[in-house]
Image (cartoon, rainbow, N blue to C red):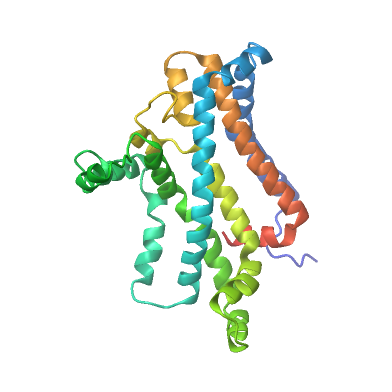
Length: 281
């Protein structure tokens, strides 16, 4: 007798599995293999020479610089925001929850245009920025702000359901024993959410490295100065330098794969905790 009410016939199960594998191979694996094939089509020396170009090195450095700034900011403020939303009830909470999802719903290009309206030469803060001699657009600060806007929801949305599922009982117990705010957070809250935080940071890093739309609007496309790796790839492709374009694309894909390898390593080492936080996402 079959005790599993949702158990499907063997043929249906295998058909669904093959469909899923085929879709992933067609939509994910095949394009990546094509990128690698095109990148190394003229040999390893041509690939390495394309990545050693000053513009490519500058684009990679700017990409990693942006990620290095965005990750800790998102980790800190994302954790604090999730804590406030999961633990406290206040007027406007639903509005704030909705605002967190705005970067998911709004086109990245629109996000970049919003920054132009704020910090452009005719923007709201133009006179203040000019008086302070601060340049936001067509410079690194604008790229960082655009990437922050796009990636902010990843940590928050990973931690809110995790904190809500765990509940406040342990924190209330620690508070009743006289724990201060920092002790409460560092000894109780953070250990309970650390693997959800790790997963959110991994998602954030992958998204930050590949961001194109918002960064394209605010960067100015200045070679060697404000081009991130995705923008560098676009310029090379538009100039019909396909070997260099695919070489840079393979590097960007490799950075994303490194993120996946770190994720798999963490799941192998702390599988239950990380997988549980992933399922709640």
